[in-house]
Image 1 (cartoon, helix red, strand yellow):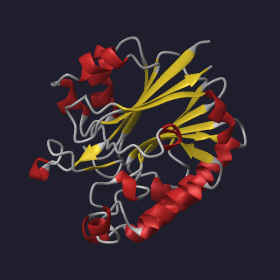
Image 2 (cartoon, rainbow, N blue to C red; image 1 turned 90 degrees about the vertical axis):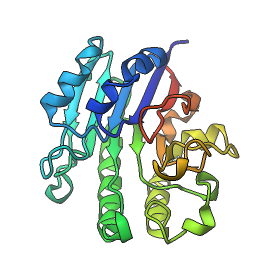
Image 3 (cartoon, rainbow, N blue to C red; image 1 turned 60 degrees about the vertical axis):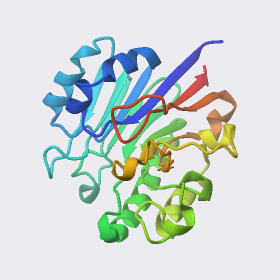
Image 4 (cartoon, one colour; image 1 turned 30 degrees about the horizontal axis):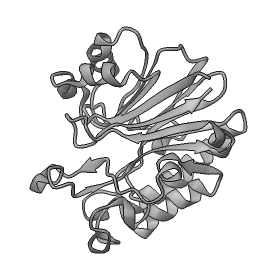
Length: 258
């Protein structure tokens, strides 16, 4: 039985990551599909940086509103049948946050979900975004099963962050509004693959750069692979690769039997 290995990584600036061990780390993980968030570059900048991985087809979405901000990319060894950029909603399509790549048996959607911001100034917008993104995923699912990956900017339950009680409804990324948004997506028939495989394991994917948080493992699990229930039986492994450094996030992975 063959497997497909997918990896998702919020790189917090691809040009900065290229100067670190990024290329070596990607070659070490050797994903068939690599999804990136927070690339922070215009398409030509991102594609130039990724020329060091010539074995991959590269699709890039960049922020139109603010250069050097947000942005996503999908790299795949197999050329997608088609690539779709954004959700077709002008309000949500300014920051290069969504790419969908269609393959024979599924869509891979990478997303960099908007952060609710300092003082939760964008919390209302975030609720609107979550609703729109869920509807977008449902529309793709009508055609074939969907794999969703990326930085969803929410810790789902208490086990997914180091200091749940102190942060609940006080910190962006762990408010009831954001949790409800993820719950609504999961209730449409999507499965959090890491939790499916490891219901009680405490492992994080993001650490604040301040206060030596990573060194002390005071983190949050906000990077995910969610799969359509139609793919549930194909999920072989789910990983959080926290041995890889270079960003404030570590990569997360999924292996699917094909």
